Image (cartoon, rainbow, N blue to C red):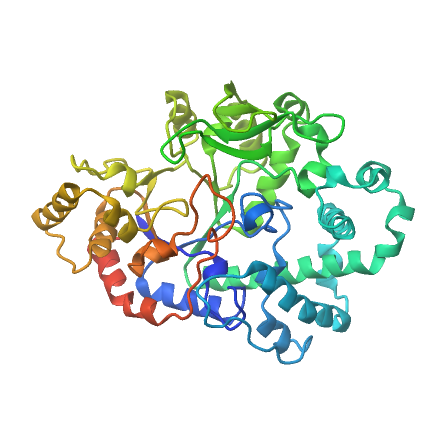
Length: 480
C-alpha cells in the first residue's frame, strides 16, 4: 500500500523547554500529522547523544537521551513542581544548556519517585543496570571515554567488583530512573500515534560509538587493541559529500567473533528496536555486504579497503528468530551490485533521494519497493539545494514542472508533489521542506562535526498548520 510520511526529529519539536521532547507538543504533532492523511512518522535515533551531539555516535544503542523527557508530564504526575521556560523561542538547540537546565528537575522527580511494578520489570533487563553503571562511571571520570578510565573502573564490566561502584549506588539508581521515565513516556507517545493510524519509522545506526556501553560491555565483538582502542575504524571513501571521504571513527565489528556468537549482539539490538518502533530503518545498510575498513592511524578516510560482511548469515538468523520484524534499508551512495541483490533477496525497501536522482534528464522513479525522499537528514533543504544549482538547471527544473502540470507557487511544493506521485511505496518528506526553509534549517552536513548540525528546531506549529491542506491534497491526488 502506497503511503506518505513526514521526517520530523524529536529534538526539533517546539515547546517552552529549548528542545523537543515526548510531551504535549509531540502529541499535538501527531494530531496534525493525522490531518494531513500521512501515515508514517520518521524520527532520528533517540539514543544518548555522543560526540558532536550526533545521534549516530551514541553512548548506547538501547538507552535514550534524557533531553527527551517531558517536564510537563512529570508535572502532571506530581513528581516535580511547575518548571520554568527555557530558550522557548530559540531556533536552535543548546544541548549542554538543556542538560544543565533539566537535570535539576530530573533530580527532583527522582527524589519523589516511588518504585512501581513497571519500574521493577524494566530494570530486570540487563542492559539497564549496565548502562547506568557505565554512565555513572563516565561522569565520575570527567566524561572520558571508558578506555581512558582508571583500570578498576575500566575492568568493572569483567570483574563486577562492587567495591568500585559502592559510593555511586544512588547515582546508578538515578540513571535507571531516567531510562525508565524515557521508556514509559516514549511508549505512551508511540501508542498514541499508532492509535491515530500512524506508524513510527525509527533509525538504527549500523555502527555504534567507541565511547559507548555497547563496546565497553561487548569488547569481544569489535576490533580493539589490548587497551580497548580501535585498531580499525569505520567510514566511507571519497564521495559526493567529501573529497577525503568520511572518517566516522566508529570501531569496526569483529565479524568472525559475531558469527561464532550467532550474531547475538545484532539480534538483541534489533529485537529491542522492534519494540520501540514499527519500522526500523538501518542506516548504512551497504555495510552488511561490504564495509570500508580504515586503519585507525589514518587521519582521513582515503586509505581503506572494502571488506565483505556476512549479511546473509545475519539476516537468516534474524528472520528465524523474529520473522515479523519490519526493516527498510538505507542504501544510498555508490554501491556494488551485490548490495542491491542482498537488499532485494529479503525484499527490503531501498531509498532514493530526489536531490540525487532529479537532474536535467528528469528520469522519474519507476521502482515500487522503495522509499522516496525530497531529502534526508544529511541533505540540504530543497530550497537550499535549488539555490545552489546553476541558473540553466533552475530553468530546466521550472520548465519540467510546468510541462508536467506541477504548478504550485513554491518549488519545494512541486518537489513534494512530484515525490508523492512516484510509484515508490513510501514517500517521505522532511519538515524543513514542507516549510520551504533555507539552508539554515539543514539538519546535518556529513563530514562536519558539532554546531549547527542536529540543532535546528521549530518554535511553533503555526506554519505547519498552514501547510496541512496542501499536504492533504498531495496525499489525496497521489492516492496514498
